Image (cartoon, rainbow, N blue to C red; front, side, top):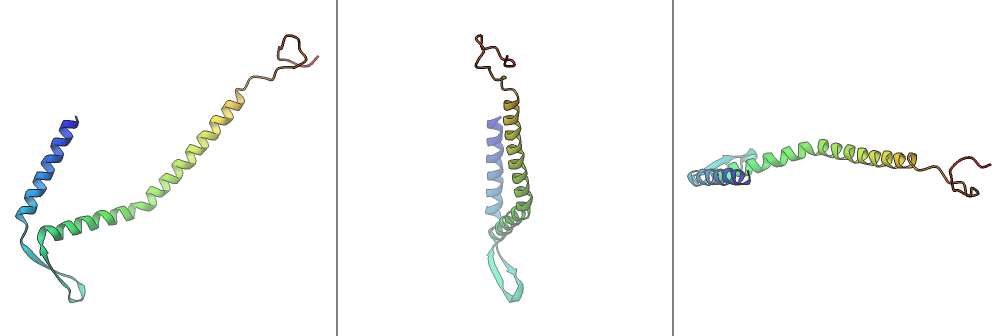
Length: 107
């Protein structure tokens, strides 16, 4: 299975590398306020791809943090429930005055 994953990764890398080699043409990107950026097409595509990933991560941050807080709260609750269960299963106390150390009411 690992071999298949690595084969797909290598194939994807080679395809993207060939794409980059074929798109080295200089292009002009007109930005607001009269700014023009001259760069290879693949560089502009890479910048916008990375910017998209960063924006997606930023958009998902509140939801991820909320899930982490919920998971942490549930883990603490499970820990408290386990402690309560252990206390409930504790053996009854032994009566000290009994010669046989048999648990029961004091006579």
